[in-house]
Length: 73
Image (cartoon, rainbow, N blue to C red; front, side):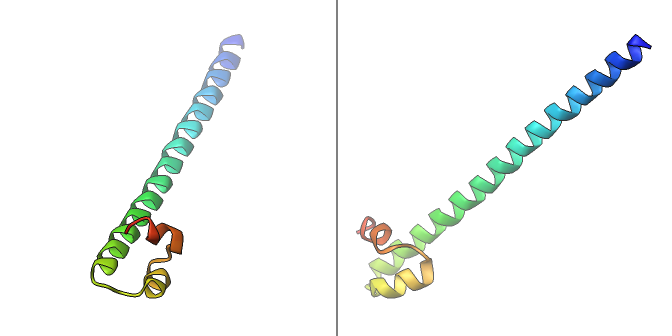
């Protein structure tokens, strides 16, 4: 009976470790996607600035703040 309990405890610990790793990977994936989207918005804003587009329009379509756009100049 003790072996069964030990195996069960080991199995539960393994499941918890798997969940922790999966949560870490999922979080990292979401953060990476968000970072990529932000970088794309910055790239688009930089191109819009280069084309002389008004900063208010850039803010509207990029979702960036005026401060973020000003830093690109």
